[in-house]
Length: 478
Image (cartoon, rainbow, N blue to C red):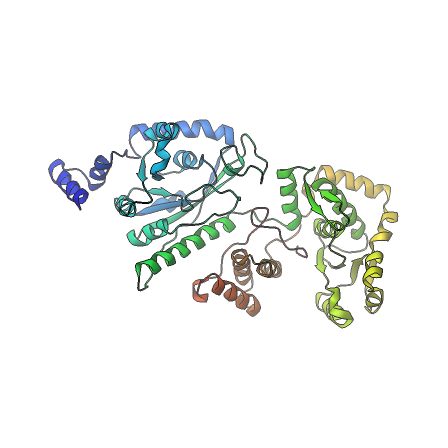
């Protein structure tokens, strides 16, 4: 109350705007002053050539009466990146504990910021008052750097500010900064000195004040909406890619020698060995199948199965995992529905699992055994494998990652594994691609209920997810 009275007095006596009065009281700089503008220019001049920073999105998203900019928090560079490359001058909300470090105090000397103490009951009022002045405000709702590469806990404060002030929320995605030495992903991702960084501006959103009986419930509900906005931002900015393309991206990130698979044989497989296996199996199966054909896969949970699925995906075939426990009648029905005429399996697996008679009961199905493929490798096949091992980018380019059936299967896979957020996003995408699918709608509503989201508040149109940050895609997809 005292600060508000002070602002009114200064406005009346000095004939200045309320925004200038608040800044004079708090000792804050305006983003449009010469000092902050020079600092933003220097940030761009330094960071653009080092990190090859790319800015995408519509700058018009910031043209609002009140703007609250929310971003994911990957590294200590995030504030510098947003301050230097956003098309608007903004004020940053920072924790008061940050100012205890001398280098942060020096860095923030010419950066417009508002230092708040999260333990103070007046902190939220100060942020609301700053947003109400009309200056764009930047907040990191996670409150701390990610240590997983994905979204951390989203606190309710930023959402409550947006709902209280009626500010327009503009999500901004920062990608790549976490893999620098300024992040905290050491041990999860290989760090690079100057990784490529992308800043992606997303469409503006609104968080209306929830109509609930208590302030605690309203704050919690607003926080859930903010988390959904950030999740939508993450999945919307992921690249559209197929299973094999995601594998190539992960291989480029971790390196060919990175060990990622170990099966019952106690033999570890790296990205490089899986690549060779996938190319070999995919090349051999391409002789007896046609592009776009659905190929049945009935093999055990071993590394060659993963190589086979990758190889079929790379050569434009659709691998379909067959459940051999369904019995002969179930397999015949599955093959008839999916129009499967070729099945890949292993003699050793069939003998040990006593499934030889099961395969013999499948009429009009051509069975390919892994044990017989090695003898069929020709010199031309070896040259093809070597060439595409050096230049794999041309493989898998004729597939459709945005397919309703693919999105439904991926959503079902995520839901089965307990990844409800990713399942909701994928099923929502499937409904957008094929609105008449009742099964995808029912499963999406079930995922929404587990997330505490009413079905009516789960509109179709959320883009799909990808790897590696969103988890591995399900085998059996395009």
